[in-house]
Image (cartoon, rainbow, N blue to C red; front, side, top):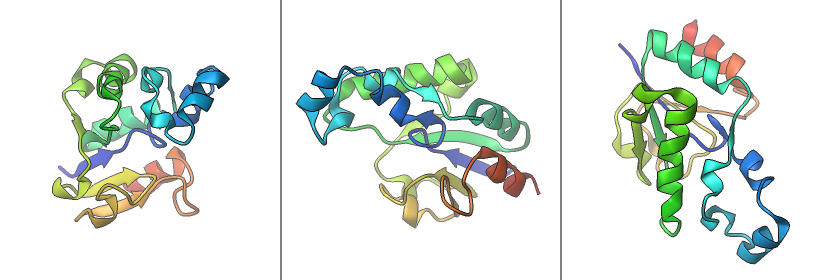
Length: 146
């Protein structure tokens, strides 16, 4: 069975939806380091189609979540774990890996919106979510299920 890794922020999780729930004075306080805002990662909504896509992928692949979390925001690590259990269920929480070195994991596919944190060096195929080739979950599913 092929192994698929799926990133959280910008792929499963709508990062902007969490930011919109933070008061403007708090956003201003953190400036460009909004990823350091405590509790922010727990406020995010799923990306459109992400939950359905996760469930469909799990029917055909060995699927894991591969995400990074800012070192200077310990609540982000906890919030990501809670988000996974809340939105994807109990079995998904044991499929969560947090790493700043995504290239160290082995799989057939990595669905990520960026090439940072080793995603660009991943040994399998990088499916860059949100690009012209893979703009949304429908296109990604069509590609993987073909």
